[in-house]
Image 1 (tube, helix red, strand yellow):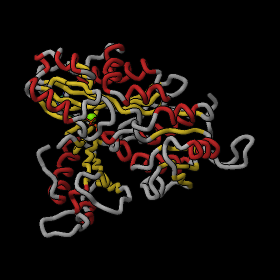
Image 2: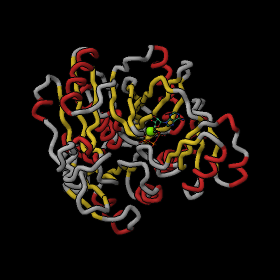
Image 3: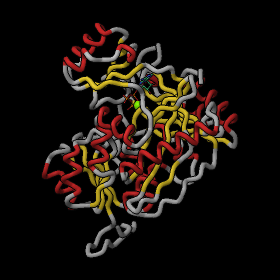
Image 4: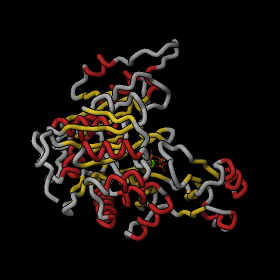
Length: 395
Ligand code: ATP
Ligand code: MG
C-alpha cells in the first residue's frame, strides 16, 4: 500500500487527504483531533445529530451504520476509513472495504465482536485465556463443568463496561441468569482471583511493522476502567515481557492493521491470562496523549494512512483517572462542574473532556492525565487530584 500523505492534493482529486471514522464517540473525537493535527480532513458517520466526534470533524454524515447511502457517501468523501467502536456491523466495514482502504479489517473486528470467537482466536494464537464454556443451548448449559463456578456469565456479543454480565455461584443461578439474559449466546468464565489487571496496546501497519507501548496497569470499579498507571507499579519485568509478547502474538495471528488493545488478568498464582481485546485505541491507552512520543490515536492515524510506525517511547511516568458523569453530582443537588481549576493547579495535570453536554451517572465525560518524571511523583499528584475530585484514593 502506498502511503496516504496528509495535506492538500490527493492524486487525481483536488482536495485534502481525508480519513473517515465510523462512530462519533470520544474515541472518534480523539482520533479526529490527531488526524487533523497531522493535516488530514475528517468525516464522521454517526446516527446521532450531536456526537463528540461529529462536533469536531469537518464533515458529519448522520446515518445508520448500515445505511447504504451513508456508507456510499463516506466512501466517496474519504480515502481511508476506520472504526472507533467494535460493535459496528461487520457488514458496514466489508461494504466500505470494497471501495476504500479500511483498517482494522472487517474480519479482525468480527473476531473481537464475539467473546466465543475471540477466545478461540487466543487459544489458536497460543495465548491462554480464562477457563470458560460457551452456552448457546440447554445441552451446553447442562454440560457446564462445575469447576467453572463461581463464574461470570457474559453475553457473547455487545458487552461493554461490564454490561451484559452476571456473577453466578451455582448451576441454578447460572440457569436463571441465562434466562434473564434472554438465552442469547453466552460465555461462562470462571471467576479468577485477580492480583492486577493489565493491558498492552500494539499498532501494526499493513506492511507488517509492529510496535507496542509499555504494559498498563488498570483498576476497574463497577466493571468500568477507573485508573491506569504506566509503568505498571506492581508487575515484575518477566510478567510484563510475557504480556507484551502475548499481545504481539495475538496481533500477528490476526494479520491485524491498526491499534489493538489486549487486556490481561494477572492472577494470584502468578499466571497471566488474556481477558479480551478491543480493535481500536482503548481507554487504558489515553495516557499516551501526554506521556508518550506519539499517542495511540496518532498511531491509529498512521496505521490507517500507511505512514511509518516508529516505536513509541514513554517519556513521562503517567497516571490516567477516568472522569465519569458522577463527578458532576454532589449531595447538594443539581449538577455542578468539578473543581477543574484546583486540579489544573497541580503540576503535570492534563484535562481531556469529550464535549458531552449532559453529565450522567456512569457516563464517560473525560479523563485526567497526570505526568511526572517518576512513577512515585505521578502517583502522589494523582492521589491529590482524586482527593480534590472526590474520587476513591485506594490506588
Ligand atoms: P470493557 O468495557 O473492557 O469492554 P466488558 O464489559 O467487555 O468491558 P470484561 O472486560 O469482560 O467486560 O469485564 C469487566 C471487568 O470485570 C474486568 O475488567 C474485571 O475487573 C472483571 N472480570 C471480568 N471477567 C472476570 C473473571 N473471569 N474473573 C474475575 N474478574 C473478571
Ligand atoms: Mg474489558
